[in-house]
Length: 182
Image (cartoon, rainbow, N blue to C red):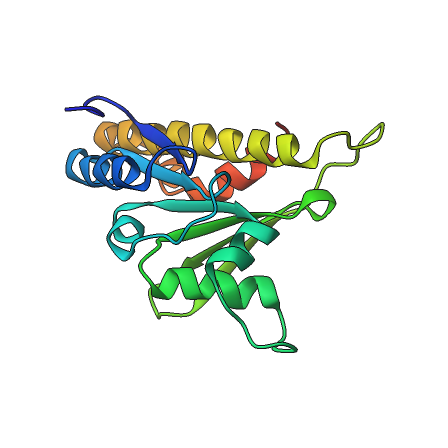
């Protein structure tokens, strides 16, 4: 298969939608984590693709492009991310430029949990907000992949309370933490 042996696959909207859909389906079949970056071509996301993707990544304008929210309805970013969660996305990662990033996911009780990664203080001007967001998304994916692999190794090893605690660490939180320092 195309993604056999991969830990994580990053898809982009510069690739034709039908190809992304096939690769996302293959990721689901093989257990590879699939991240879909909404940057690039402006288009809708097929429901089937959302169900096969582990993380939908976008900036605020990309999120607005694929969702709708009534004016004056509170936290616009959260409400829009919840729409993607309701349509099948497991996680929605939104980069916010100088405000950092937010990750939205469903909790066991059906409520939405928000993880916040504040932007690191810069020593100079932010030159390219898009590139900074792309770097964050990539670092998030890599950190999640490492965290998931570590969890698997630690669970298989069993062992001490310390090992068990480390195996329970949240890959999303690790991804948000390490994405900030990219």
